[in-house]
Length: 268
Image (cartoon, rainbow, N blue to C red; front, side, top):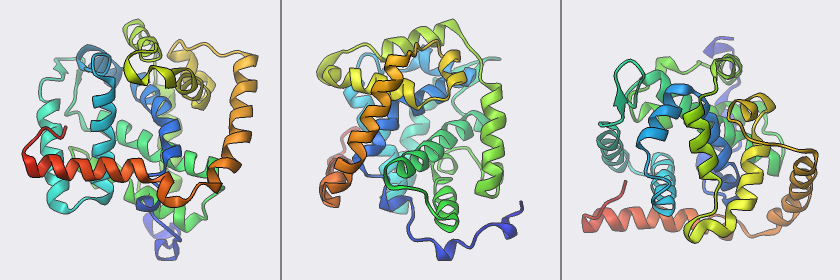
């Protein structure tokens, strides 16, 4: 399918700015990371350079800040945050193994954000119509194009992206160091420790079985029953929560970014 064959995005009902701040999106944070790590170049770079295990709360804040700024921020804010990310990426390289400036690896990371955001929205609120899905997909390009990914690297349509996704899943491969790092992410620590059991269940359950196996993550029939029960209970309750409350955390994080910029404090 060519871009001219794609659904007309002017008929879309909404875009990513309308749901990226939903609290339910955080239920996909862990599985998004696992998909990223399963691409060996990404996984090795993160396992060997990330500070997430030492400062999990701050790393979550900076990751969410990047997503919210790229969705809601001004052009000046987007450029500023992109420069900060590039500065952080500069030392993340190992000749012949990986580089944080590799646009193909960056495309995969951005693709996991686009895919899981859409998947979670539909899990909670039901299927998007084709025009809306197409618009949300194209608006998600910013997560990569703000860095080294060019617009031409993205599959031109949401349908073409599905082919890219399936082909990319076939390229994922196991690595013991990455698997070890992934397991450490699911160990309770710090002030977020209380949330790890649920996040572990969501992280493992949201993955397709092959990727779960590649990452060396266990899954049982009991896990599947608990996972299914959670979604049956969560979805109707979450829909009753007022929209402003569902997006409060995201708006506060975005406000904090602007406050940090005004005061010259570290944002990323």
